[in-house]
Length: 89
Length: 246
Image (cartoon, rainbow over all chains, first blue to last red):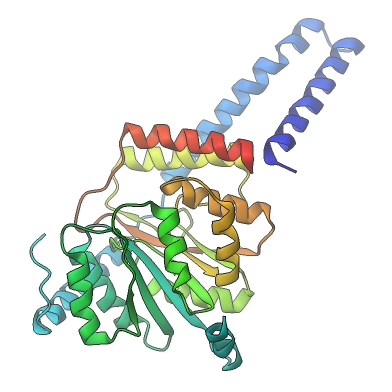
């Protein structure tokens, strides 16, 4: 099934649960009314957390950059010797 | 078709490396040299799909064909810029290998990565091996904080919305089984780099065996990189499209 259908089904299920909670009134109503807001805020915080963590752990590759530079010099030498004109950049 | 069967019966794998180019006169020459330097024990061919570059990219390719041979370097040019997706489709028509590697011409991905992808594919029998910059062993070089933030933010957004099953959606270094690539190209309709995203998301939806390898991305060694406001809008439109249609 299409992904959007999956997401909508999930949201519908959650809404049904939420409405169910409202009916049952085990917990004070005011709290239940605020649950969707809590959910959205939690989602936002989770997103920001993932971005922050990802940013901190973003891997870098300075060694590979160096190896690439060496490879490029070698390649340019070869091209010059083979008489291939690549012009200046 | 006959060529592919011949390759399989010999027990070896042949890799077609499709490289779309536009104004990559210097990079393509360096790239080809590096392919031949690092892929010594691999049976491969390079298919260059050039979209009528005004800077003489095709002339440089023709000169290099003189060094390495026209059977190893195939120049399959097109008259003008016709888009990434069609470039892959065009290259695929001329591919005689049973595996296809897609990568950029700008040296952002090291040619050694091809070996790593091949090895992963052989180990796991996967249909697609895609590179990811976000895991340890991979990474980027030459990105400032803003660029990393944008990249990470975009990635988290895509993950929350699409649950794609891969950690790097916009990476453009991938190895595909040729039949799988043919199937995917026919089902994908986006333009530009959103096309790359659509391919991997659709592949994930179709249940293809996808493996990831860490890859390194060294920011444009020569030339300028493009990441502006319009790219961000295009990305969000792409996400919405993928959300609704995959």
